Length: 379
Image (cartoon, rainbow, N blue to C red):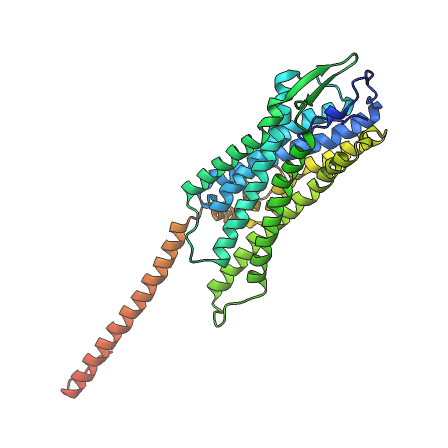
């Protein structure tokens, strides 16, 4: 059995050229079930991730280094849902390519690019959290440096995915058209695919596993001796919440993509699995799980982060069941300058109190002096 869809790990080059008939047509009810399942991914991923982008860019308080990387992650996931999931599903359903050569190239090129941008945005967040918590005296990334790093991530992603685009082509057969990556005779596909799996899955997950383990030990298993101030505990709680949210994001990504990568690793060593009659349904299920990773992050942010939750309330306040309080309205608008103003007000209040005490002291001394001179006072 040929590979069922030209995702970025294209295996169609293993298909027999004598396979002329389309044996991948499914009953209407199966197509309907898969259509609903994949439509859920596309709608949730696109709307959810675009909302995340709006929450961060439209509110100054949300524009932090971590959140800039989340914008990049959300953009990659929304693009993946819009430009890859739908077309890959249609291709996998009947293994017949309807979209021409140019989109065939884009179809093989873009998924690697988007996934690389996604996972290395997560890796950059992990490294930034590691530096901030393990080495707090080291300089943090500035806004400009963060944008440059995001640009570098996309350039590396484009370079890694370029061979998929360059060697992609459309092949017409008697009853159907296929979109495949046709490597030259002296170049094998499997080493490239294995290298891609290492670069966009195994290596970044290993880096994030190490960094978050050390960060977790520091945040949850140790305390600063003698520092029990309320401000310290608030900062520690905030750091724990951010790290917890990102660990859930990373673990979700790893679980969703594990069966997909295992499927292609197994196929690299045993090509016969593609000839099994049940593999079309297996592939559709595995691909659905992988693509579903694009829709979970907005849900995770909403559940585990108060400001994102308020942002989603603001975005969907037109819904009858969404209630936005005055506190919620202020939460995303209160900037650091306002917090500093509150601190200044507190300081001014302390100064006023001290001034009042000094004034009372002067008045008391004056009374004592008047008594010593035999003067009467009226209080």
